[in-house]
Image (cartoon, rainbow over all chains, first blue to last red; front, side, top):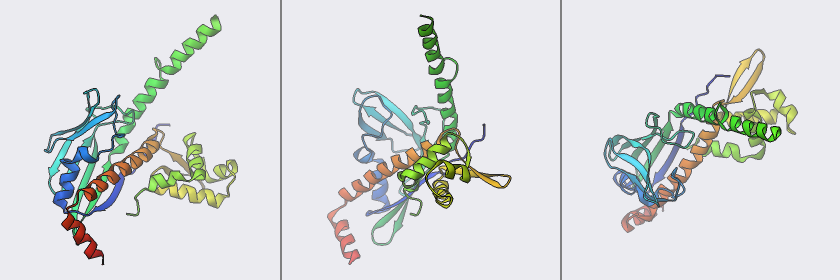
Length: 158
Length: 114
């Protein structure tokens, strides 16, 4: 079956007790202070999370062993109202330079010193290619299925 | 705000997770699911409705039947996972904004609430 379903974007809305300026600042410059340490695709523990504060800047993790794991880059840098990040991690949890899914964060001032944060992670259907490639690697010729088949054959022959 | 946690909540229910997992094995109609599971047909329909609004399954018509399926590329799982991933990340962001709020803004907020 080759039918592909388009997954809906992941959307979140939250409010924070701050001006849009400060909310944007904490989100970007303060990125390392709040990004959960469990949220990494690196092989060792996450030591630092970096979001370079400019369009074209990178966002990435630095692991305990000093190695960097790429997540993507900054597509739109419009403080204090809007930030768009490229998330280039596929369903296989690997970085793919040519995979583009978008994370948009908008900061809107509300009354009473509150900022509304509208979050959206979209174009998730593009991860399907990476997911299919991964499944192929596992199930296809040369993948685990055939390796295990070879093993089973050897055992049976023995 | 209505969509918040939707995918996560949809899969938090054990029966609904069971429905989702059955569909992961292949597309099925409501009646088929009701036969396989110890729940009534209307209950299955309710679970499917919740899964559908969470973006985890889709439906299509096949003659007089409605057939439900998850994304064959496994993106339903991925989406559900990302949904929780971002819940965690954004909750941490929110906590950090509150933690670093100036005493004035905290005070402001308190007096506004009165």
